[in-house]
Image (tube, rainbow, N blue to C red; front, side, top):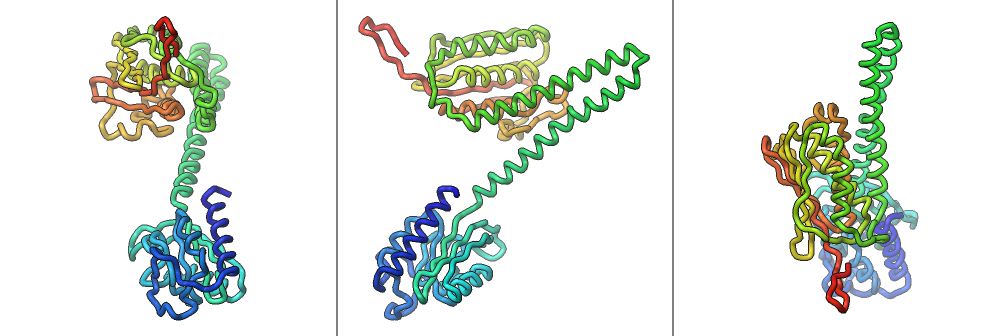
Length: 386
């Protein structure tokens, strides 16, 4: 059970317990009465303490009679459309209220509420339970975030399936081609080269999926160490130097030295390496890629600047999404998985930082990791100690 559901269930139990154990009193000050009925009628009086419990819930809450008329409701219950014009209007919720009054049990269901006619539906989980002989409590939890998470998960699984099918299918076809061209050495060599390319791409995809999974489930600050950004940059540059040399791209390191942060050195190196790989892959031959470290107040930025093809303005907001590619055909040619920038984003978030991008088509791009600086103390001799 998620925390919100647990809180709702606990509050529901407390509210029902308050109704059974206390005498009828007027609702507490500051709580809305949605029905506006005769305060002298016992069914319009709420158990002492019930509204205090219900009003602290993050969702919507209402106390209703047998006909769904609300004698008390929280602002979310009104704004979401759970209670409208002093009564519950959703047919399924009304049916649950009638059933609860008839058998004395409780009821749970999921519905979509509408703030007004024609408005987009808000997915909510509704819980109905008896409060007294005449009244029931109706609780509503906003499930839109949970639904978005489910949608993202489904999209991720669908994208992974698609991305895996492409190289696996290519490998299968190429294997058949090699078998059919067994008497043609040149064709076998050509097909074998393509198989190696697809196998490398498949291996990269699997490895990056593993990396992304680890990043989403790991908090590097729990086992953080002092990390020298000089070492991070040096390691990242070293890991892409061979690829850069093959394209005659000059890798340069600039900016400040001896800057330190708290975190996981391997994760930070992975992030800078991914930015460098992108810069090299999307830059013409015989250009420059610069890695620079620059402090600003209590943060430090690690930027990677290239002279590549740049990114269209319409794509800048989406480039950190998993599997999003500005140019899918070019990504396939370079072996890109569409996960590199998503990994960079997660590394930054895990370290309490952010990643920003500047880019102009035809002029190049600059990606910047901005991270909190590690506090620095000094020895009695005045030497800095991270």
